[in-house]
Image 1 (cartoon, rainbow, N blue to C red):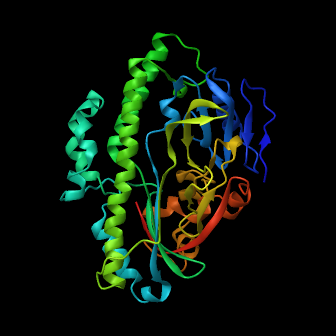
Image 2: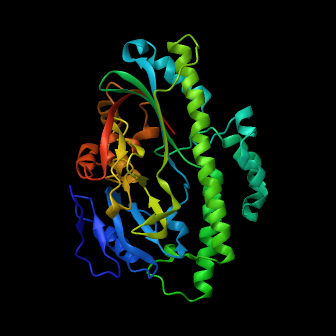
Image 3: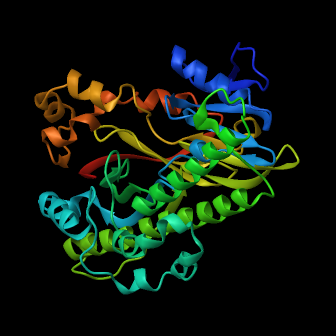
Length: 393
């Protein structure tokens, strides 16, 4: 589906790949962002777009000489990692529950952290720069060390999936844990403080920004890159443990070679060149999809997920959707669905089936097939996956 330009009178146009009408709150949020003077060319909305904080989740905002920390959000570097293994579905027979229990034992979820820190974590290069991060997080180094290689909560997950050829894939979704959250909050506070001092007339206080070449911008950009690197490595550490568990169950512990490995952010900002100019691109719930970029677009825990290759569509700033996108809030999902609904909607998936994950029920998400259909000009599908094991954060 080609994009359409929304009929809204804003300083910068808004291009949308969504096939649903934006609600009044969503429209207001889109207009607020598009009214900012430093927004470059246009704002791009992905097919899974929905309400966020300051900016819509599923939006791509390119800016000149400024950046909005709340648009990147508090889970800096949140994203996906997937590995195509040499194994096939029949090798998993009768092992799914044991695999799930082993994953839950090996990878801390929710607010939990690792009891022991492994060598790969202590050797991570990023620790050398920790003392240069925001003063407000300097007491968190031990926690950051222990949380490296942990999943977190909410919609974060670890899944064993099968593709249409019955090949086994491993997939997980996580970000920069508590340290990323704390760094984001410190800088958002600073940006809001500066906006107050300058008496800036912002359409929303959450759109407070930093201007390039100021000490505040430099400090945020440095911390942002650090947290993005932490998030990426966090996924690598978990994936290494995850692979070991699968190899133990399927290959007698023998190390195997991945047939394909993808690790991509979907909450982050980078410096990129678009329409011949260098800009800051903030992808809030969107994946980079330059020509030949591999990306991961997961459905809900009862739906299909997709491994894709980017088409490099300039209008979307070479981006695509990051998932199915929520249809209803967590609280609304808890009110609308029962435990029986959850059991029904996750039929055939080895996962927890209790009240604690009711807010993650598949029915709370948009249909992933529709999301994929809407972005056929942004990505091509490389593999279609269906989960057989799911561990939620």
